[in-house]
Length: 337
Image (cartoon, rainbow, N blue to C red; front, side):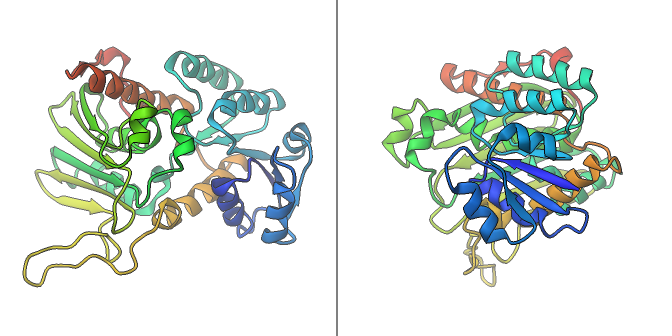
């Protein structure tokens, strides 16, 4: 099997490194519009990676294509894969706004070509186990969900104007994972944010710290907090409290958090520096699953239609932040997953 990667920046190169370890993958083809980048990445990855000079050649030669180019190119590249009848995995977001995404969803579903969205937490073993236990009824009635998402260091400030904002860029993963776990539509969203890390976020009409409250149709609430700077390290956790059990994901010896209780845990000296390290198993599972979907041996666990939920919630968060009031969502527009 040959898997093509369009875009070999940080995340594209990381995906390529995971793909070359899979026995089912004979060759990884690399394309990047920046001269020399694909060649350098291929040299670092070894004999199973090959640079390709033309994007159309990459798509034609591949059994599946991973789209890791800038956001504004995602929809167009997915359409090129559909036209070639080649399965794709596209990094989030697949489209910039709901209207564009709705049109793309219709095209993908009409084509019958598998397109996965790169929400890596769906492929994380601990998150998958949490979902299994929720669906099996082991937690009972879900009361509360709490999510923490703090970057260790802020992103490159030049990236901010094109990032889509904290809700579409950072919190979008929780806005996908939490409804996916709870399995109910969100009926109300409240969001607030502040600029505390760097004035550049305000200059980009964004915030660097945010809080989101989601209310689900069954009455459960989720509280999501996110920030662009944690001096101790990268901290992304999920906690779910139910009537029968209380479970956490992302709480381990590397969690950058210190308890002041006697005998309580101290912040890990080897805290996660970023998303690649924290979600290493998730990214490995994502590539393994993509290969299985391409081979026709697995169903798509992250279809494009599901990504409508997180983008709708991100847009509602932005409206709430700007207005200062909760945003109610029409349940008929929600998607229970």
